[in-house]
Length: 282
Image (cartoon, rainbow, N blue to C red; front, side):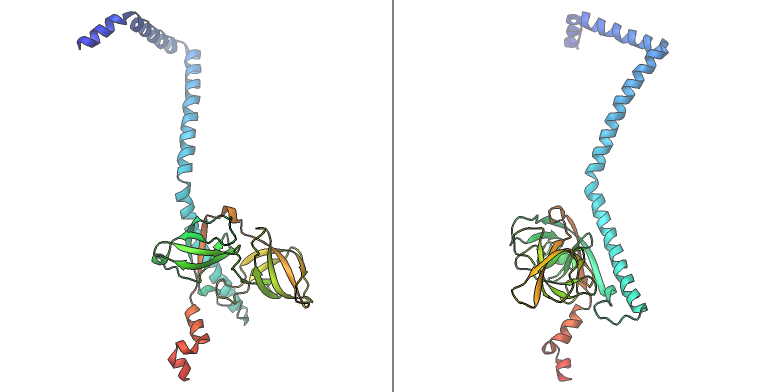
């Protein structure tokens, strides 16, 4: 207490000036409407800007959680879309095996941990993993476009083989009903892949979309993979190589969807009778 008294005595003139200034400002803003309005208008503007920045920062910090919720919602919508496409095919009496049964696919959401384009042999790391039901061979989508396939899983993570990998080979088709071939990448430009095995007599139209065929069990039929940019002659005289630009923006991938064919085990049993003694006996 003694120190406070000594401090007040030592700085008495300064404290007196501050007190008088405070009284003066109080009387001015109390009895002078224009000055009071100008003061509150200025301080209100500053306070408003501060609150606006604070709100923007709070929204920014909450974006990750919002994106997680949106990805989950997109997963549910994608499941419904696949189901509707399959039922529409059944209603049309469509007997094409590459068009029916789309509602037998499930969709799970996930997030890429690492994997921007940078190496022709680099695998991507994503989550979740086996704990969430992921397994090898599941297709991976980004914004509805084919991204890659799950190559391996641990309890909490999964490794993805992306389309842009020199060891990848994907079953693609020109348009929804055109010729099919193998889509691959040579490890050079991330803007160009090749659809090989296309017969030379097939008309190749620049701008056409390359879709998945559904033959490999990685993706259902009709998933967009790329856009035709042109074509060149292949080593085999009767075929051409089609230049394809991937639709995935590989340098911006973060949230993804994992696809699972719910009838894959049934298909494998039919294709491998030795794995099913009852089928072999028949």
